[in-house]
Image 1 (cartoon, rainbow, N blue to C red):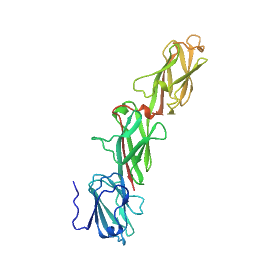
Image 2: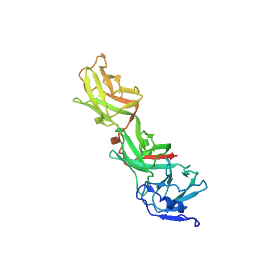
Image 3: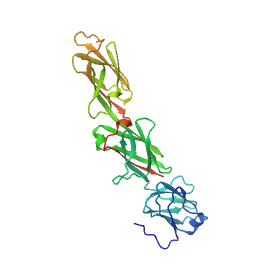
Image 4: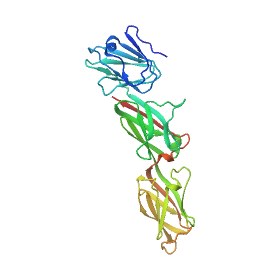
Length: 314
């Protein structure tokens, strides 16, 4: 539906802007008060030139009758305002330049989904992202970065949450927000693993719902001490929040603990001597309860997503 335009204004009809451009020439700005744009290309910034002579009482109206959103910015201004489809905006003159009223701020929102380790925006009949023009892997393997199609503004807020599927796995989401992009990290508290010697090799077994996998673990056994290394899983907080419970047959205790490793000691349950050659009785349940950042390639759960909402303000 098109907006109703006042008939007493000098009106200039404008076609779609395919790229960033000036709204009109200075002469056209001088001679018109209303500018109607039929915008169909998304994420375009339109700069509004000043009139030859500016008076503080002057006012112009810009109407977007198209299907795509625009970003309106007065010439010489760092900030501007969003002009959504089928809406209008008024620019007042302060005696020196046009001024946009952007008290409501410029929003961005969308739903992000991980498919086989790669993040992307959900954009279908039921989901419509807004002002997020790119989603890529971040600097770290556990980050995803969103790029915004918004010229420089100040950050007002950014809110992110996991959906009900991710929340069942105990996942948390956080965002480091900037003026041109935001980096998202998903974290989890702890993991539980069953470690056992099968007569040939040490094996890590994890329960359903754990984002850690058996290939995350490597083992070194020497003089009764098993060093378990989990390089892809970095415990960032509560490093020493760990416990080990023997399954039976031998005594098990913790030795050294680090961000990406821990040590288990196996001792004869009667004599207390270290078991220098492992047996199938060398086995234990280990629970690490510190926070760790989950890498992207572990997060491809069908039907799950992250919800994002934020706002910029000039």
